[in-house]
Amino acid sequence: MPNRIPNKEDIVRAHELIKPYINRTPVLTSATFNHLFSADLYFKCENFQKVGAFKSRGAIHALLNLPKEELKRGVGTHSSGNHAQALARAAKLFEIPAYIVMPENSPKVKIDAVKGYGGIITFCKPTLEARESTLKGIIERTGASEVHPYDNYDIIAGQATATKELIEEVPDLDIILCPVGGGGLLSGTALSTAYFSEKATVVACEPSGADDACRSFKAGKIIPSVSPNTIADGLLTSLGQRNFPIIQKYVNEIVTVSDETIIKAMKWTYERMKIVIEPSSAVPLAAIMEEKVTVQSKKVGILISGGNVDLKNLPFR
Amino acid sequence: MPNRIPNKEDIVRAHELIKPYINRTPVLTSATFNHLFSADLYFKCENFQKVGAFKSRGAIHALLNLPKEELKRGVGTHSSGNHAQALARAAKLFEIPAYIVMPENSPKVKIDAVKGYGGIITFCKPTLEARESTLKGIIERTGASEVHPYDNYDIIAGQATATKELIEEVPDLDIILCPVGGGGLLSGTALSTAYFSEKATVVACEPSGADDACRSFKAGKIIPSVSPNTIADGLLTSLGQRNFPIIQKYVNEIVTVSDETIIKAMKWTYERMKIVIEPSSAVPLAAIMEEKVTVQSKKVGILISGGNVDLKNLPFR
Picture (cartoon, rainbow over the protein chains, first blue to last red):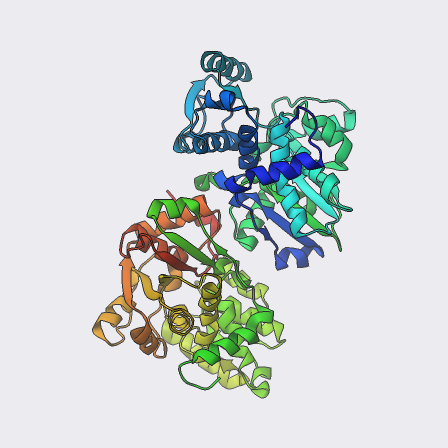
């Protein structure tokens, strides 16, 4: 794919390319929630995606776009989250090495998950500098290609396919709600909504303890996170350079919600919908609960980003 | 419906009757599990059913079969579990009273759930005698109809529709695995398999700490549970009089599994399939894990009975 903002055809092609390697995840509804909020809510369940998160889409798409010679030398990233697992799984499918740099204090459950997909882990000190320099060393040594978790147009086009599927299933959505961290899923969602939906607006939902996207959106320039603090561990990162202009152009609004409501929304989702989601996935429902977005009588699409959570430490009271 | 073992037409009719009031629940698969067990597993997800359990099917069907005059006077049952919620919900739909007798030591979460569906709760001492006599008194006073949770042909025909749907979706199943408690779901599953499947065998799966069905099946007569003890709280009851002959005739085998494996199967289901299930629903997967049933190269249907669980006390280690 060319190194520019993906157009409609790029996303259609991305979808065709990745289809054999990903799940077409179900869109679930809840009569209880619909009744409670007097709206029709459609949950696009990327927790049922390969490796339990939408990240599989972008990772596969990025690898499919690497020239064969480069692909052979492998791929690398620094991440302790879903992107690491998704990249390791994608690399395994293509029988190439995935070099994953992880902070030495990463939870065992995440280390095991990356190992389970065959990722080659290098541990480093838990600072961004250490992560970047360690990865740089590996890439110089191996010739692997770095695949950034979100600041990458192939990744953006891959993540966009989730919302393309959602719109195919429910064409007349009024609003699409999407969590925002680095902006990979959000920028993809915004593009797919602009290209494939007739009327839907896009509202990004962010934890108030990690509100760099909201502040950046208002300021008109990227304001990086400084010591973000939220239960939504997938949303701690700051907006990417390639993601921000797309968000500025195609996202209608960014709202913030409290961790307290995120936890409540998470619990409600387990209880009423009987699905396992990670805290980041509960942020859009929390925005509805806090009435930060008006959904009454509307058809609302909601991106459930993933389901990778430490089940021994669920934050429910 | 006539007061006899439901025939094929009875179950077809039951399905048509209840369709407007229940969810057609999804059949999910897991590439991880399929790989792990070298089999094709199809999970019929009744945790996504109304009130979070298959019990909604039988409850609605029982009410639809009551003569109008009787229906008006309401329905009653003694239960602290999913049947109580299902009956309360069904009664609410038809705007009739549901009298629910619950032991005074029932967990608050279950009491609240029944109240939430508008059930009229009467508390009693936590003995079977107290439950039965309290219900008898209410029925004499109100003229309500007792709806037994499983020892009832309308209930059996209602529960049978879950497996009918599963077979419609995956016609060429080799084996169907079903948990067994009182035998309502199992007898319905056995009938639907006999009527609608070409070749599937039915294997019932039971916790070894509540193995009355297994012992009854072997002995050729009902041997009631004496102080059963298992994490699978939906499977503590003894087999019903109407359920046992159906099970004797149409079930191929009953296997038992340990609570330790049930908990492990439950955790795996949350982790890999990202769905919330109650312990009873994990019993069939536990049977596969303990190799009590041979699934290699087979197409296997699995009844996930429900998803009502106390999320604050998940048994994971």
